[in-house]
Length: 163
Image (cartoon, rainbow, N blue to C red; front, top):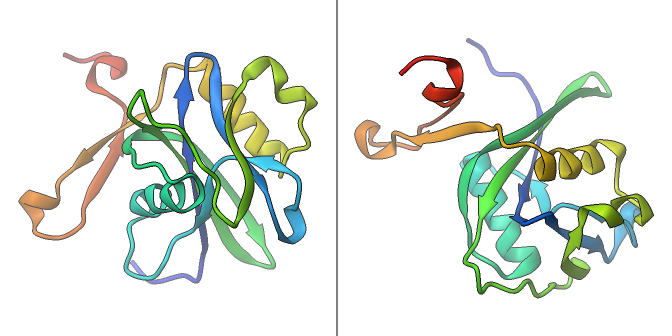
């Protein structure tokens, strides 16, 4: 293997019934648009940990990654741009509170998605699919066995047809 320069972003998908936690951007090129709590992966950080950090920074909520819901890949000026959206569970009594990066953080019913101005069509699709899909790549954390950050995201055994 060899290293490749890569733009690596992440998001946290938090579901409650038929709602998804969304944030409204406060600044920048997406100001006023809606999307998932998201951001970039810092050097030395696992992408799943970055998703949890961004959820905490943008919504003041701690969560647990349950698996990978969506992956978007594209080329951006010739550089691979990968975006991983993780399904995250939060405590039932947790209520999002926006920070200075976002003007709003709230659970939005799926039937309202079409009325929002989204950051991107891909992010809207991720939210729709998270409401409607029960399938995701499960996350298995091998860090304690390996002695360093090491996570496998794979289809659950039962879904793959084996027992």
